Amino acid sequence: MNAITVDPDLQDNLEHPEPATTAPSGSGPRPRRFTWGKAVGWTVMIVMIVITLVPFYWMLRTALSSNSALPGGAADPLPVGFSWGGFERALGLATPQESLAAGGSGAAMNFGRYLVNSIAVATMVTVGQVLFSALAAYAFARMRWPGRDVIFAAFLGGLMVPTIFTLLPNFLLVRDLGLLDTLPGIALPTMLMTPFAIFFMRQFFMGISTEIEEAAMLDGASRIRTFFSIIVPMVSSAVATLGILTYITSWNDYLWPLLVSQTDGSRVLTLALGIFRAQSPQSAPDWPGLMAATLLAALPVLVLYAFFAKRIVNSIGFSGIK
Amino acid sequence: MEWRNLPTALLFIAPASIGYAVFLLWPTLRGIYLSFTDTTAFNAGELVGLENYQRMFADGVFLDSFRVTLYYVLLNIGLQTVLALVVAVLMHRLTQSLVIRGLLLTPYLVSNVVAAMLFLMLLDYQLGFVNAVIDTLGLDRLMFFGSQDLVIPTIAFVNVWRHLGYTALLIFAGLQTIPDNLYEAGRMDGASELTMFRRLTLPLLRPYLGLVLIVTVIGSFQVFDTVSVATQGGPANASNVIQYYIYEVAFSRSYDFGYASAMSVALLVVLAAVSILQFRLTRANTNDMA
Image (tube, rainbow over all chains, first blue to last red; front, side, top):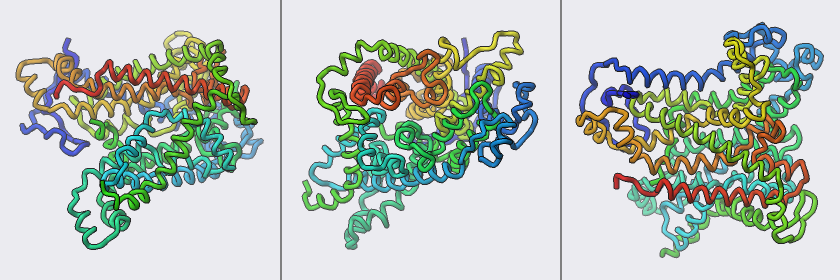
């Protein structure tokens, strides 16, 4: 059997995510040749891409359909009975009567409020986590002080504890702090650090040459000033990558906000979507409304991804773990 | 040892240390302590020895949820690892296109809740695309989320869909550490691409696969979001995975934090054991290239 036969020199668009782990092979590109192996490889790849993307298209197509027309065209690739009604119901623009008449639940989704809540939580978590993790990572990577390695090992040990294990005790703690049903209550546990963020930043600080740093120190600049004015700009790309990853992780979090949040005041989009689904008539769900809400909830991260896809794709890997 | 650096260093690590101590270390210790108490959501509770653990081993629902979770993990990880390996090798040997890698990663960027919603729609009994196709082919429509036999495979598939690109990129990163000249040498010797995969790629990739498996298995055992949104553990507890059962015990069935903590400890022990076992089996710390 000859499943995948590829000419390894035929790597157009050669992109190495990590800085030169292996140098691109020296020989020049050869003319493209058809092989059955390559055809099978491309077929598999295209099927994978289609399966990956079709659900997103189907979400858009359904969001723009109307409930009355959907049963007549369940496999129809275009919106059936085109209508903005799904979005109107998801955004609470339709009156309860209109919503019920169009197959909705009559309950509005306070989208604007949940959007603001999600932005607030993700921003607090991202700014805090990246800043404080970078500070700690710098001390672990660039400074010599007694106890450093022991404390770093303890922090890394935190990677072994599944996040789920700390949820119940953290719920009790946040409750005792009086922060249940507040946005800071949702943000707090991941606002100060995560072991991953410290580990991630430490890898980049380790790669900086000592000379620039020492020159700044000789000039009499304090450690803090050196850190913010010289070191951070040098690793700004890593800071941005960590920031984007943290923002998306926080945006998509569901279980922790589910425990902490109880009312609209602190409800984030992931939770609101779950509730909107639970409210939709179970026997005949309002799919256009639900898909419109799903699309609106996913849209901010998808837009973010459209801008930073290259950075995000290249950040994934075990570059640090040897 | 440079003691004079200590005050500055402590200043740098102060906020992160507070975060670590208060929201990671302390809750871990407290979670273990709670598992030996009869704490509920409403009162502090007292030490009750091993009572929660005894109850756990006699609790049919718990044992069943453990079985359900194991079944889920096997399906989820099995399918995901095989597909991700195929995709990663294609990313490595067929095309290095960043656009393709970007497209395949897209589902990982949306939340589990969004993924669950998309497949609730696609797999809907009456209006879903998949059942419309099944119907057109003249077959019987399937209740994917509503059938006791299909619900776990369905949830496993949804999560494979969301994590495939991510897992493939992790493996792809490992593939990139294999020097190109090894493949060139293999080609000179007339080895087919399949032979090179078996004799070259797999052995050299083993430590990476080991790490990838540890990370993905730990994540898989903690499945919750999809179940919470799509099935609430049903039908008839058929998708009542451990994490969902723990959540229900703590927050809706009995508010029994002590018992829920004991089950969390059990999950923690299982995850630790699985990690150590996998690390040993795949010898994830060694590589044949050394």
